[in-house]
Length: 70
Image (cartoon, rainbow, N blue to C red; front, side, top):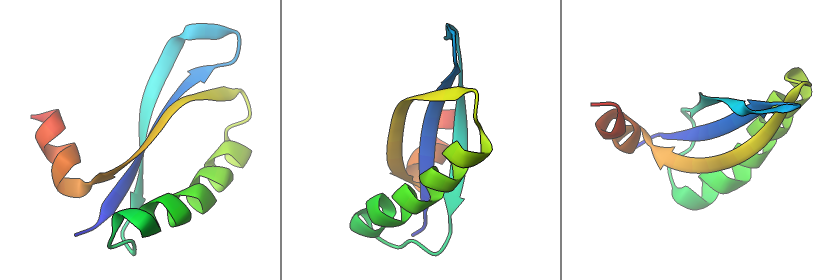
């Protein structure tokens, strides 16, 4: 089972302009590793997206993401 980091981010100065980003974590196989490895991936995402502010971050299994989209 692999995990996805679900990131909800809003544009700085525009709290209503929020979008979801799904960061794939294919090497992650359990929830603890998702939180630890996800923190590293999230740090890199934040560095690459300067104008965005985090609103929410969750670790989800790929199956949970698929069922939420249907």
